[in-house]
Image 1 (cartoon, helix red, strand yellow):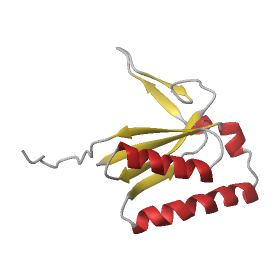
Image 2: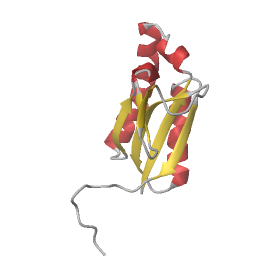
Image 3: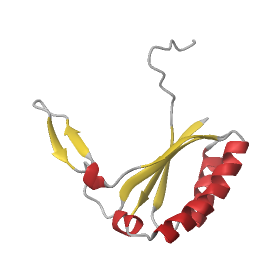
Length: 123
């Protein structure tokens, strides 16, 4: 089953890490990433640029674009993982393991469905 693991953290803190701090966190995360890839459980993942680079299309009768993220919060959406695991418990175990490697913030875990444009679903 597919799960989306959404990564939230304090953008100012994360973007303020020195290169050495960032390398240390990424090194710890790589240990988990490498294992998940070897087990065939990790799909695409990504780290987002700062929210200052974002644009949001607000969907109304007259759509408009604003600078920045949709919601103003203390923690920002900074990245994601797609996991292919047995169930929510396994996805949460992985989130906990990643949480040990990456300080602060939160992981939101949600079941997801794969959308393949143009594909015809069986059944």
